[in-house]
Length: 346
Image 1 (cartoon, rainbow, N blue to C red):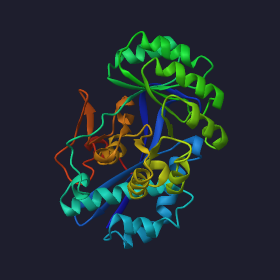
Image 2 (cartoon, rainbow, N blue to C red):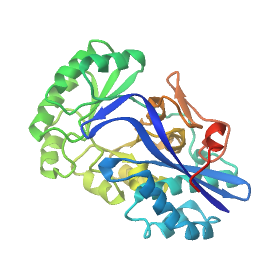
Image 3 (tube, one colour):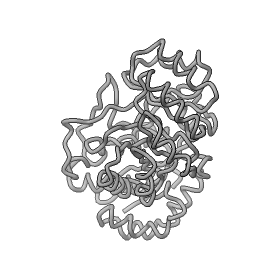
């Protein structure tokens, strides 16, 4: 039994900007767990907005190494329950471990995760492709450079309607917009009316994540569905969001992995919420984990690896407006040989 960690600085195709800042590279941590000839891979990216760095995540992983190795033979959900009290301050690290455990477990069972969970791939949603906030001219250029039937448009300025109206002149694709909490309730309601006429499907996180009073107004008065992102981080948030949103965007990295992510999907379904799973700007290792949830999702944002200049892994891939699953078990993801052979940090 062995634990290995790797860090990479993923280079993006284009500068990626949201209201929280801009970046050209995305640091990420890869966790590899090996037992009896099988290896499982997990991933969590670092983000300063949530106070996470690859160094701190790696420290968290190594802190529970002995306990993890002792429990490697158990089911992923059981391992998550053991580690959660020890990593409750670092769900990003817990996510990387949990995904690696699921990948390892699927390989031990000889099945891809979606089959292990009793799902099929008959009807799965297509991911949107994200257009980061930029000058309108550059946003149009990015859209033209990557023709796609479904775009997520990052917003959060006083010119948001003008931006979407200009983008609409260049594409008939369906738009989703993500304000990243930058609007007021009044702006969100008014913007929803104009965005509906511009063939926008829904609005993601229009207000600050703690503006619950404002969200009540938006939920009642907006003419487009509203989806929670920053307001829905962990399992406990799903029930609260049901009163203020039409759906939730679940991020595996933020909630602690596939184990709580699947429970959040089930809870959202019970509450009648639309369910989306979103990604960070991560490699195919993280994206492949998300892909196995596709059969139980209404929407998905798993374009992270598509935004990279150079991916470090192979696995589930999205191209030609389709999602392709490899003939491998677990998540189906693995580091490419040239990256696998790099000296890991442990």
